[in-house]
Image (tube, rainbow, N blue to C red):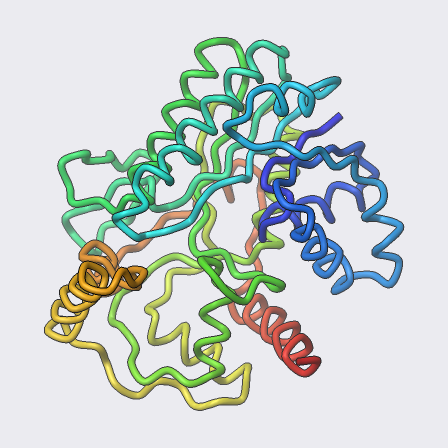
Length: 340
């Protein structure tokens, strides 16, 4: 039996589709009943008999910080895919991020140890990997994390969660950690998901940023997770990116796929520096949610290049092109918005 945490999220829902399509026996955790409709919607993208596949999942209402409910979820489980996480770059959400990403992962690890789980796969992020001082230097799985850097609260808590997983390996649970780049996938068009980028570009962006990052399709992420869990590989981490792209190139490709005009102006360092300060001030004066932090303002103008050779060599695979992933996500976005 397989347990999937975060089953109603972008990665979790696509992973569940992959698993039930492969006739795996699956349990999945959810926190709020209304989010289950998102999973059905994702399934409906790919098959007409989505209800039949969805009904194969054994759903368990549980919370990462509610150990008794997690204990019930772990009953008769052999393998765990830990996809649940909070994604936010708002500095004032640090303790909430820590509670879910670090403490919640610690609970999953502890129960994996006590239940003799055969293998654990944890979905981390490239945010939890260190940076190179030379922007032209490839970032690999061996690039050291520097705790003295001005890291985002999200990055700090994802790194802390990885430390919990490595602790689990020392206590007898074989594990795999994946570090995906920005994951492109359909069905989640708001919030912290990359789908929000498609929505914003479709509405019309005024500015683009000069930064570079790694991008990957959700289908590659799920396929690789499945292969890693069925392999002899263990106690390793893998960067999952299809391509490194500047945000300007990314937003141009998305705009073309959505048949809208791309942003034409670059957000300068001056604009971004003023922007995060004004954002902070509005938060303090009026209690508005943070949209851009100091760390995010720096990140979106930073050039980072990630190396995906380790996973390609380990599994002898090739990634889908980003153009392919963008085209698929754009198709489903336009299909969804046409119904509104």
